[in-house]
Amino acid sequence: MHISQQIEANIKAQNVADTITLDYEARFLRRKRLVSDSGEAFLVELPETRSLSATDGFVLDDGRIIAIHPKPEPIMKVTDANLARIAWHIGNRHTPCQIKTDYLLIQQDHVLEHMLRLLGAQIEKIEAPFTPEGGAYGHGRTHSHEHNHEHNHEHNHEHNHEHNHEPSHEYSDETSKSELLIKHAYDH
Image 1 (tube, rainbow, N blue to C red):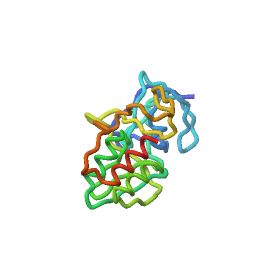
Image 2 (cartoon, one colour):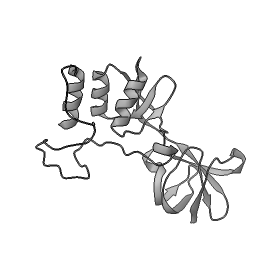
Image 3 (cartoon, helix red, strand yellow):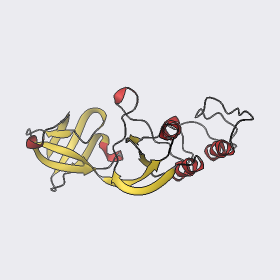
Image 4 (cartoon, rainbow, N blue to C red):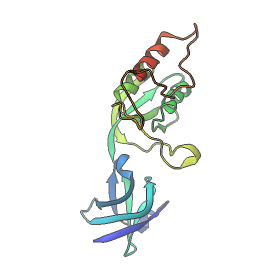
């Protein structure tokens, strides 16, 4: 079995010997046995965990390159007249987001869907490749916000703890009903 210990960025089509189709989560790895789209098994053994993009390729120990293709997966297409406001709410929850000119793509999540609908956004559930922005400074990953209450901190289910998703949980008289509902959805 061949081994890949190197990733080549911005690969050229003429240098590609094979392809592998991976979803967003599978493109975040350090060490794993994979199988190419043509059925060839190979081992990935990178020096550190990497977030791989659709322009990267695994360089095998014999010099061949296996190009990475993003696999279609269930995502939500989000549109709104004030897309910047919607993007702020998504980013404030550290949610991976693919930004297009007139819409956003995020992984399907019922809590986020509920919040975005309360904000007036239109949601279309689709299946498509998901290649979100790399996070601050153009690399790395943001973490998705799982809503199963298995955060990396104590969680006594009394819901009286600070959660640090908002600068403050104080609200003024100008707070809208939808903002209060959004706060409630994230605190419970």
